[in-house]
Length: 239
Image (cartoon, rainbow, N blue to C red; front, side):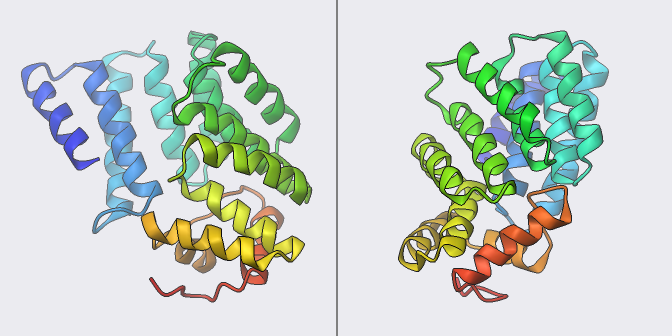
């Protein structure tokens, strides 16, 4: 991510209004926050916000810009503004599958499970051969929606597909750990814990401490944290 930010910055020094470079920077900073990489992930999220805001100033009809800002809003737990941005991006370009993937992801986190399922399946129809991480985001949306409804077996089914598409994705592993915790399969939970700690060692701690949340509704976050604790995770997991 640091290299992506640096390369994008080199492009911006040539052309400060390069929308592709701005979008890549915003996404890279958001990933630094999500994965808790670097010395100050919260500062990275603030930087993602600044870049996304500038991108909207540069091109107010750029769907990528609103998608980028929507992600920052979601990571700030401002789900209403996040969905407003995703819906704005959808209105600008209804065929922009990447935005629909993350819109479904946000809707599932907000507890709007019917819309989440509808948009996840729409994104899959629009981009069925997208073998990059974004196909997995549709599966993640379906995982989150199922987990919020306490359908842990369905959550595990979609969660496994989501992880197959992108193995190093922290929320997917956390949902699997919690699902296995609720269903009493501690061995499987431990396997996902080990995998998650290998690439995002501070993620579980941030969930258990409340520094980061996945869902908008308290009861859904409590269900997630409860599953993590049933899986045997302490307040401060050892790296």
